[in-house]
Amino acid sequence: MKTPLLGAQMLLVAFGATTLVPLLTGIDPRLALLGAGIGTLIFQICTKRQIPIFLGSSFAFIAPIILGTQQFGFSSTLSGLAAAGFVFILISAIVKLRGVAVIERFLPPVVVGPVIMVIGLALAPTAVTMALGKAGDGTQLVDPNYALMISGASLATTVIISIFGRGLIRLMPIISGVAVGYILSLFLGIVDFTPVLKAQWIDIPKFITPTFNWQAILYIAPVGLIVTIEHFGDILAISNVTGKNFIEKPGIHRSLLGDGLATICASLFGAPPVVSYGEVTGAVSLLKTYNPVIMTWSAVFAIALAFVGKTGTFLLSIPIPVMGGIMCLLFGAIATIGLNTLIHKRVDLSIPRNMVIVSVTLVFGIGQMAIGFGDFALKGVGLCGIVAILLNIILPQAKPAVKTTL
Image 1 (cartoon, rainbow, N blue to C red):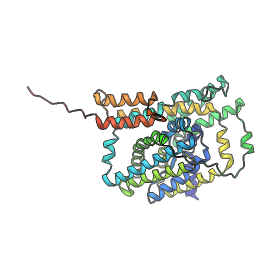
Image 2 (cartoon, rainbow, N blue to C red):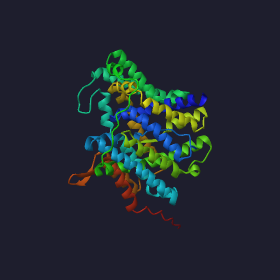
Image 3 (cartoon, rainbow, N blue to C red):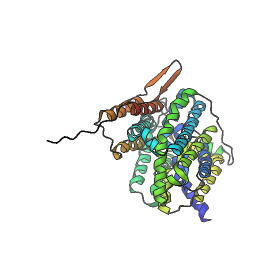
Image 4 (spheres, rainbow, N blue to C red):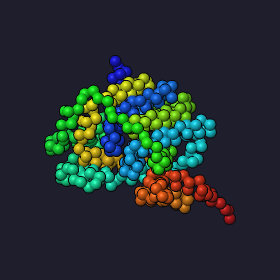
């Protein structure tokens, strides 16, 4: 029974982040669990069950999903998410034919860094609005004093666990923050348990199918390019943890293919994109459990939970300030990852070329610049990603300084 129990524990580590994405984007959390379970099994098939990785909901797609749903509707947004999966597959084929170096050429840190920052900062106003207990239209859902108390407790707990936590608990800052905020909400009497009590134990999630929409595809698909860089980092991390070179065997092209097919599959029934999870890699390192079969059990448990009706209604009963507190840290953390990409790779922003790429990308992304004609418009993360890539290709590389001697 050791392997199934380890599988359940790995799912617990990924549970908070996996269900947080649908809660922030308005998707049924059970669909996210189903997508994560099925996606992990697809990934294992593509990688010949050699890599101990669990696939969960991707934070990088939170902003595109929310803003895409507002502009095109959720069904159309799903077609954009599926297109992002096809981008993964396309890059997988390119890496298979040309090697990893070709990706580094078109997606250097000066491109990836600012786009990741945009992904995190684009929804900063939404995080603050939710932390204050307000809906997206400004309607006050929770008393402002209670809202600040709850969101502050959630944020503080997440920060404390992230910095001072030890052992397995350190890998679960999000679920810890949500738990504290939820318990405080119970004491304050703002949790409605009625839907949870009425929900059935066994229930099939309500599936949503994508509707083809070119605008949504061009808006969201470029995010797939950026997430591939995150994928490279995850595979490198799990390779270092296990002492095996998964980039060579079974091959980074296989893992990219697995992520792409998993994302396409999830979008076909209304789940958010699923990608390799760093949280689970941390748990693998801590527990020294390198058997990929453990992730198979995690996937099976995730699929089983997706058909428990009370799971979704319980998660949806979490008050909005709880999620707002978590988002204040989460979106800032995503932006910090982009900034760290520039710092870690030593991108010199005193060079005019680099300064132009970063500056234009940030302003276009955060300012919601739109370019289009008629009913067609490309903006947000999709636009700034394309602009960053094009600027990197068009602008000439800085020439090395010529040394002179007297």
